[in-house]
Image (tube, rainbow, N blue to C red; front, side, top):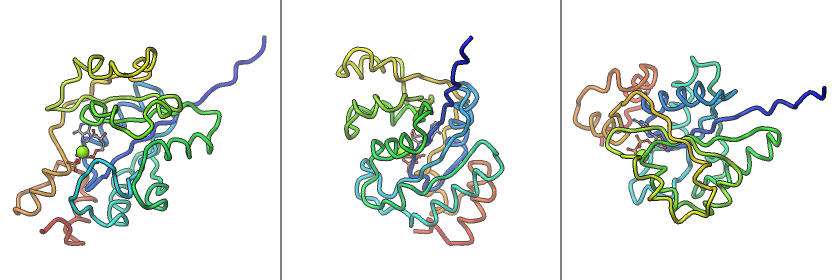
Length: 207
Ligand code: ATP
Ligand code: MG
């Protein structure tokens, strides 16, 4: 009997990670487990297309925090491909890069509910869905019940490329963490201690 070639599955977790927090980590670990991913690669964006005018923290700090937060998980890796590319970070370019690097792997792009609800606005979304499937983690404040309705602009079949995954609800956002630091409120237990220490050491988010 001919042995079937095992196709490995790779997860990519994109984000601004300004800063990275337990919401990101729970979504990535949930996806790794549920979808049997060999590795989850965290890819901090240089400049995300959807973030408007807000000044984003220096990419080097966001990369360092992502490395600190993922260091204890042997199945997590961090890539600086978007930061090195600079300019606006389009997911299609990143996924194409990983597709070329690992032609024999299936690529799953991991997002939270808020991001997947906006997927129709993403650059070259059809090509993107041809290259990778999507895993959408639940997130407090965003309902995925009407996802099919939201995505009805996509051609038939594409919706099957998007799987919804329930994760423990963590009402944590980077926006709230930045706000808390600015106001002198605690951020402990919202993100890994190494990241908390880094934020205070470097004086991030004070204003
Ligand atoms: P900001 O408030 O600055 O937008 P954020 O907390 O939304 O930050 P991002 O870097 O924008 O973090 O998110 C990266 C990815 O992680 C997105 O796909 C987002 O939906 C997902 N995500 C972020 N926080 C959570 C959470 N608490 N639960 C599930 N998914 C999340
Ligand atoms: Mg966000």
